[in-house]
Image (cartoon, rainbow, N blue to C red; front, side, top):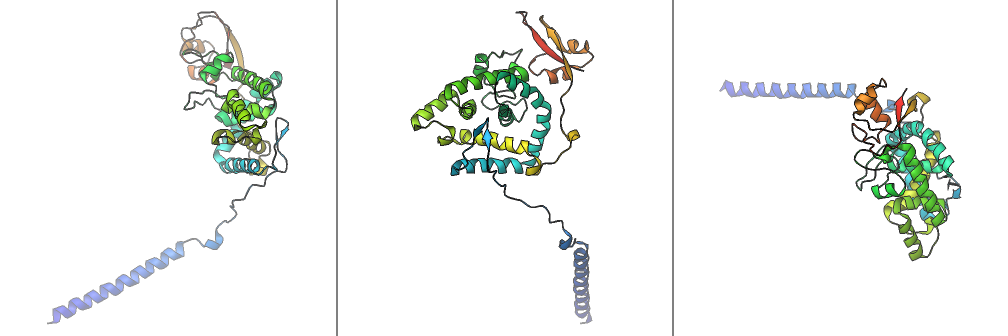
Length: 303
C-alpha cells in the first residue's frame, strides 16, 4: 500500500523540478537576448526622389508624361536597390569606359551611349539566350553588316574596340533614318524596321509616345536611370574609393599577319601565360589563329 504513494510522491518531485529547471532556462535565455532598444535602426528604405530634369544624348526626357515618369522611376528604384549589381557596374565602368568613351567621341556618337553598353551586358562579355554576344551584344547577322569577323576561330564581337566602332555605325545609321538619338537607342533593342513599323502604325514620331512591349518600353528608361545613378553615385547611396574600382590594365599591341599555330606558346614568348593572353584578347576563340588570308590582327599583351 505504501509503494503507490511513494511513486506518486516521486512523480510530483520530478514534475516540480522540471518546471523549476525550465523556468530557470527560460530566464537564462531571456537574459542572453539582446536588448531591442540597442538595435541599430538606422537602415531604412527610402523612395527615390525623381530629378526635376533628365536628358539622354541632349534630348530632354518628357517627365510631364505620367507613364514616362513612372517608367524612369521604376528603373531608378530597381537599380538603386539592386546594390550588389550596381556596385559591380561602377567597378567595371572604371576599367572599360576609358576604352569606350574616346571611340564614341571619334565616331560622333553621344557619350551617353556608353550606358547602353552597361544595360546590354553589364560591361561583360555576356551571351544572351538569343545568341547575342559581347559587351555590345551583337547578333551574328548584325555583326557581318557592321564589319565584325565572326567564326569559330575569331569572334570580333568580343573585341571591345571593334565592337564599339560597329555599335557606333549602327547607331549613326539608325539616327539618320529615325531622326533622334532616343529612337536610335530604342532601335538597338527592337531593330530599325521594328521601330519604324510601330511609329507608322501608331501615327506618332517619338519614342515616348509609342506603346511598346515590356522589354523595349523599359529599355531607354533603364539607360536614363543608369546614367543618372552612375553620374551621381553618392546621391543614390553608393560610396567607394578609387582602390575599390577595377582599373584599366596597361597593355601594348603586337601586330600579327601570319598563322599562329599555338597561342599558349605565343604567349610564353612574351613572358605571359595563355590565360593572361585570352583575358586581354577574348576575341581569339581557339588556341590558334588560322589567318590564311594574312589579315592584320592586333593582339594585346599586358605589360
